[in-house]
Length: 143
Length: 143
Length: 143
Length: 143
Image (cartoon, rainbow over all chains, first blue to last red; front, side, top):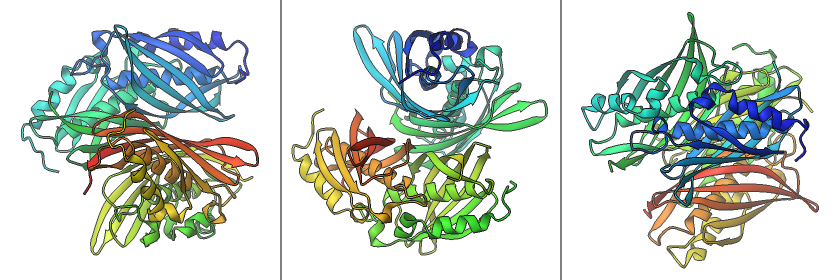
């Protein structure tokens, strides 16, 4: 996939570093490229649900935001993306020290971008897929 | 709908008050009954995305957790619910002082419960639907 | 909701009557209005799955197409709608003589319309909800 | 992935060949293995929507049924699968001679199986992804 804006890296970083809720859950950027993005979250107690696993909402947030950043790498300098809808399947209890997310654009449309996110949990040396999401993004002019 | 556990209120309250991530985003219980639940979140800066709206992930978390609580009102004392998947449509920018969520069970199955959540944002006297979700829950024995 | 095209009824009817696959499954229009549509399918053997119930794919098709028609009642004369995505929960086995579907627009956006469909099965005098769908539509110029 | 029933091939074939609606849309089995399945549909006029593309409902049916068969390869001889929900994104207009579908199990749970389907359209020598689906299946005893 070809980025419309060669400076896409400088667009993605602040969308992760400066977004209040993303900082609130401790998510950081690992890397990104045209049509993809990778992020991580160190698992803190504040992210857990009642059984000690990472809350489904954290996994959904991570999946949505990382897919949004993957989409952002492909739009023009005067465009941004907004989530139309996302759907996430929780596949296994998320029990571990770190969440890792990889997002890839499946369909880079001019007005709608569809991306997918895989959320894995790292526990010691073991890495397990705990959630899979599909995210539909609208490509919109920067307000 | 008939609750299998007449003490359902005492089950729902701690699932909201004691769940770490739910406290982290400031969500509280308004009320619940057999097959339904209502919650709220005061909008703080820490919940916003880059354009100043409440992050989609907050709305997804609220929708998922409130639907889970609506499902919890219907299961037996030795059962609980786990989210299998949730899907949320973001309908309008969530700009306001308070998020309000109402969840209702659509299908109270013995092993699978399907519920729906409506997330509204209150801005002054105006109340607008900003997200709609469908949540599929597994009914499982308490571990 | 206000129709942009007062002649919306004459637009919906052919989209049901002349669409090949819709005729192939025997779906007909019951009625429509601004932001809503109702359709039906007489249950024939050709629509069943291996256990004798109406196939999930028939229910999905009905839900998608009826929501599309509900959306179509709201767009301008030079616009039409295309399905971006749909999600359907199968709630009960669809066993009966007739499928009835009602679709309602939840969010009539200028470029994206979100609608919901309820599929019920009529068996004798009993009417049961067997599927619920959310459908996201793109508003596009007529090609 | 390991099949619980070594005779899985003899289970999948009739679920495609003898299912009424699946025959009605002309879908046939290409091949299957533990946790995966491949099917095809020759594009007939009866499968089209109003603009001459294959109807979204056909693609949804194909995605659902092929994922169901992928799940069926993994369950025990006295078990079968039922669709709990499916979600499909329509990525490109489906214009061509043949639809090809590949489904893969993402999470082979004991009571819930999650699978994914990719629907491609073959037009001359060109093969394009036109739909992507996620399918959640319940593992249930054979009635």
